[in-house]
Length: 269
Image (cartoon, rainbow, N blue to C red; front, side, top):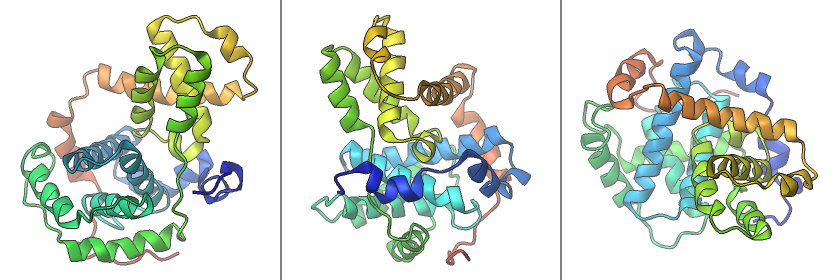
């Protein structure tokens, strides 16, 4: 991994502008509301998480796969490639990039079948339609779209360092979970990872009723951005709190989603 985030492709190519992100989603939002679109992205972030956990991958690999997934659909419509095919594709590519030793391709595909028949049966009411050859073909599409910019910086390392500096062991577990939750929002596409880490810490301190304002005040960061990230997270929590039931509601939303061809083709630039 490159040693400097500010000189990395993550910073130079993949910190996106809100207006550009909205413009790229315009075709999908002709069929879906903004909230329905976000619910679809949350579903597949959950699917990637469950897929990674089923083969006991580290959270960083799962997070990298989720960022790849969000990057792809930040520049392409949902109808370009079926998200249920892109999900294992992102995970297998993330395993290679993160230099994960064992080859688990067949296990990943088996898990896709098991999850669609089991835990996610409410969303996928048919047998998983793809095979490993489809994933390998899709990987070329993903690589081309990202222009081989594969290094992803995550908030986990700065979060660990900041919590050590704050010297309060009770904050890290909750802040870590908040960082994981941030992968269900657009935060990883819009903000540097160290700001996501600080926002997660700040929210954790509020939830735990920790008075750490002096420490935060001494940070030389743009607190308007911290507030924006916090608002993204709070919007996610409001969605969950206000009665959104994925098992009940997501299938109808997926029926409205623009459909991809079963055999993906490379998107035109």
